[in-house]
Image (cartoon, rainbow, N blue to C red; front, side, top):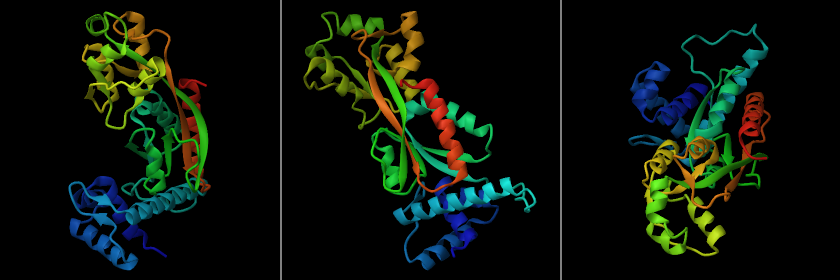
Length: 299
């Protein structure tokens, strides 16, 4: 049986990123947190925390944190069902679940899923942002309990549920289009016009170009790792990019943005993958995610 106080110390360091912040959350000294982490590492026989700024978990440490989250969630569920049990003190740690989600989902519909979930559950959510093609890796490594991902095949130990498709449109400001695409959206024009990408994994612009021009084009690109900044950059004429339809729609209607090629959206199917373990709080979260996705995504 693993000592829950030792597990809580490792989980707090992983969540807060430092021994000092973990100590404040746990209401103990940094030395006590360090001792608990070291003691669990000795018992497990492996390093659990990579010390640094910020501190991070090893693969084994991540799996133990995942276990600690599940235990905490199950205990909270038991208190929910059996109110006669002694309740936790007011300063006790809340149950928390780590979820991986892509930035555009967070910027368009996932917050509504969180709000829906929060209306019936006090469990906290800790979100990890990554590209939808890579969020499943967080599940495989045991860092999270659920993920919004483009991967259809279930990760080992997980259930997969289709959510719908996040629709994107290739957009730019009218002035940008006049400057760079006066002769049309051609391969030559695209090879000169600045595009926008979220990060090095973002291939949406390349996929859209290949679909409509039937060829690969090298796209010069600004990197903007923010959904809001991505849209703002398109509005300001910095570059062209694939913006979520839900965010671009009012600006397309007002004329502040235009489609590079009208009527050529790109739909990215999304899945919800969650551990197969029967944990009621995860079932409630899954229902909230499904409701929000059904209201916001393309069927």
